[in-house]
Amino acid sequence: MDIELTEELHRIGERARSASRILGLASSDEKNRALLAMANQLLEDAPGILAANALDLAAGEQAGLSDSMLDRLRLDRVRLESMAEGIRVAASLPDPVGITLTEWKKENGLDFQKISVPIGVIGIIYESRPNVTSDAAILCLKAGNAVILRGGSEAIHSNRAIASSLQVGTCRAGLPEASIQLVQVTDREAVRLLCGMEKHLDCIIPRGGKGLIETVSLHARMPVIKHYDGICSVYVDAGADLEMARSILLNAKCQRPGVCNAIETLLLNRAIAPTFLSEGILSLLERGVELRCDKESLGLIPESIMVEHASLLKEAVEEDFRTEFLSLILALRIVDSVDEAIDHIESHGSHHSDSIVTEDAKVAERFLRGVDSATVYWNASTRFTDGSEFGFGCEIGISTDKLHARGPMGLQELTSYKYLIRGSGQVR
Image (tube, rainbow, N blue to C red; front, side, top):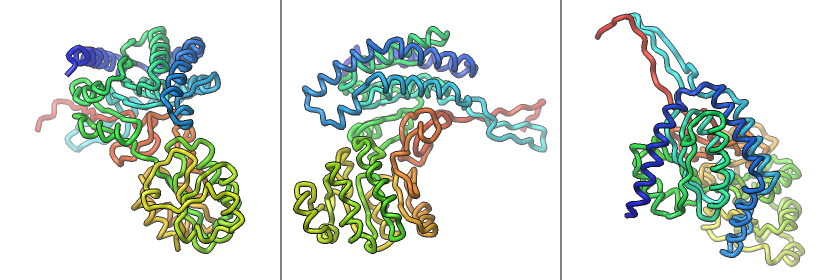
């Protein structure tokens, strides 16, 4: 065990706990002033942040990171401005702390009140995407929580620059610098050590690959909110508008294939499969999407398409339907009904985001109720599973758990609650 690293992490934890007590009592105005100062500081520091990001990108290219991973890592002026706008939106949202959730009075005269409160200190362990540094920090602060951030080695320069900028903004507004702290090392031992800091951390949220999430879940001695694979599906029903289906599929697969809400599986109802496989898949193939088809669907694709796009048409193996490709690869299967589509999603998916395309409202409602995923869509792309698209400003992650948060996690999901009981001398 690295004694020096252990001691440093515990110092970070102690500072975070102290900061959390101040943040928990901060007014909405104080927190919002800090957020606006952070947004301004982020743009003021843009040249330094982009220079730091260039170092990470160069290292990533040298290390052979995939195009989708480099896209996750990349920052530019537009993305920085989007991050700053996300901070401003968070400042404009209602304060989630101090809300009366319910209240009642007992016959003995005791007044009961249930109110929302900050969780306290939250640890965020994440990979690749430096915008998470900003998103996590601002949402935690708005909800009155101190945050300890541990990003991946591929974004270390970017994360340091962003975290430093946000700390300056926080201090300018009079809140503790330790409200936001970044673990400065990328040693994997830091993850295990954070997982054992139940005295300092009230909750830990891992964002990254399955290996990271499993490691955190195995070692954590505090509650974990998990974001497992994004094995998302679109089911094109017999009653679908096929042009709508084509448009949704292009967006859900091709707009940003390397993100968790991009689809990985296409399910086609047998009734429309021949038509769709002779027309609808062309747009996907023209975008370079590799289709891994079950035997039946492969046999329905016209010979002319098979010849022209031979390199992109392959026979699927069963594991393809349980894989998060995060690239321009799509598994394709024919099913007989909405019930078979639901069964496939429940047995092969990751309970993240799934969609049905149909004009049949009865079938759509069966799908919406039958698929047990965090977000379920009717005639819309799964790419909307995002905090900003839900009106949350930005998000801390997308939980595939059922407790205590599910789906895009905004401000409310970063609070707990407590009971306040007011009496006049009652005893039991």
